[in-house]
Amino acid sequence: MQNIRNFSIIAHIDHGKSTLADRLIQATGLVEDRDFRDQILDTMDIERERGITIKSQAVTLPYVNRKGQAFELNLIDTPGHVDFSYEVSRALASCEGVLLLVDAAQGVEAQTMANLYAAMEHDLEIIPVINKIDLPSADIDTVKEQIEVDLGLDSDRAILCSAKEGIGIEDVLEAITNQIPPPSDVGEGPLEALIFDAHYDSFRGTIVSCRLFSGSVRSGDIIRLMYNGATYKVEEVGVFRLEKEPKNRLSAGEVGYIISGIKTVSDTRIGDTITLDHDPAPAPLSGFKEVKPVVFASVYPVASDDYRSLVDALDKYKLNDAALVFQKDSSAALGLGFRCGFLGLLHLEIVQERLEREFDQSIIMTSPTVQYRFTLTNGEEVTVDNPVYYPDPVTIEQAFEPYIRASILIPERYMGTVMELCLQRRGVNSQFNYPTPGRIEIQFDLPLAEVVYDFYDNLKTVTQGYGSFDYDFLDYRESDLVKLDILMNGEKVDALAQIVHREGARPRALQACKRLKEEIPRHLFKIAIQGAIGGTIIARSTITPFRKDVTAKCYGGDITRKRKLLEKQKKGKKRMKMVGSVSIPQSAFVAVLKSDIG
Image 1 (cartoon, helix red, strand yellow):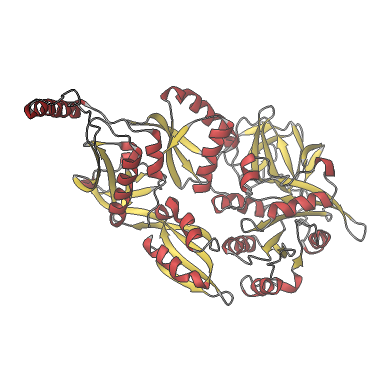
Image 2: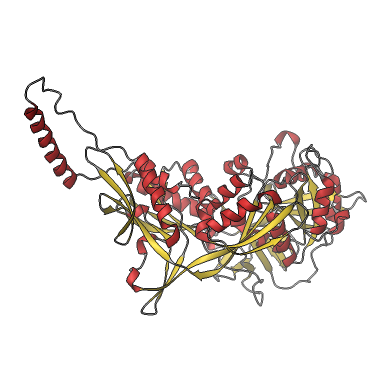
């Protein structure tokens, strides 16, 4: 156990985490140069294209240090995005130390701070690493000052490296062996293994990634998952060396995988404890919680005939992503579909993209909403995540919406525009910190509904890409919420309804009406598009009708002949308007979702 080191790499997005992992894998000789490819731990196409880690991976690196001692380094890679913060916390709980990566050009950013606090909560050894020192814009002295002032770490211990050029990689490996402590020896107690990840294999079932804190497990053992009490027989145990490498047994302190015929990923829970059925642990490891979705949207097939294939695609997708929750839903305009819950906006985008790419689905996604709570006049409390189920306004006593605490790190010159953006989004309780000269950290309490819309894109726009953003869920607060309906010729289109704050209802309605007018083709009759709260119309656009030239066949003659034909046409149009229904193209639904307010 003295020669095992369990560590993770944490960083803000795009600070070079995956590149450093690549260099560590190459430096320890785990992969031949001819088999190597960039972002080797990122297996999905989307991860490689966007340069983000979505699914955490683990890999065991063999390393011989300068003194000739052989070590087993377990790198537990973590997703970099705020949506997956619970997975990151479980990965950190499996480690004894972390490499805190800071970009030499960008410096300390919002998620660097958030990840540092997460590592401190787990009492981990933190090694600061300054990456990208080869860049012309690298400012090492300023970054060292930020590490001292912002993070409170000793900058003299910071390791300078360039993961891209391979500079300083040996120093990083030496620091891991010298500064990160080995797993604490707890003796031979009952088996306690923390699940930090799970993925689905179509031949073997669910492969569980875990860190053993005490005891040992081998093939043939009967294990129990402590959350749901299910028992399984272990078929194979082993370690990750890019490919799975079977072993006779896994012991305390090690990181590896267990295959035991678990049918789906949702049968396991990240953060759950594995123990032996005949000799169980007295209590599960601390820190487990149910991951709850925070953003909701409905998914419909573009053609109603594709509903069956969408059902199959979601069932298969769920095998790999237990965080996605969905249930059947239907809409008068869009037909049968599903109401889905996501961890955040990035998770929603990934699900949408993977369904389209991997399962060849053409889908429409409605506007993302959050969970609202309503207290009714009869004392009952209801939770609503779909505008269709908005309670009757007469029966609502109080309405509550979820709030988050947003931390925004920016250069000082953008303070005015960012303040304006946050106040537009109903931000309250602003706090300011000046970590280093020229940089400011702004904290705001913001309604989650305002953030899921397009806040992040706008923040990047007003700060010219320099703003970094991180958030934590706070609580539910009382708010003045209304249901905004969109009407087509007096008929409600339930797929376009939204729950909004009363102050923001009119701008949102005007935007929706404007976008729909641009997208819906002209018909032979006039179409009125209206935004309404209850019976009050607050916005309107009108699509003018086509007009057939009925007088084209009249050459000369009396004006009354033309007038007669025009009157006849007018009567026909009236009748057509009574029976005519508006055909809304799929692009119109998508256009409304992409509206950019403020």
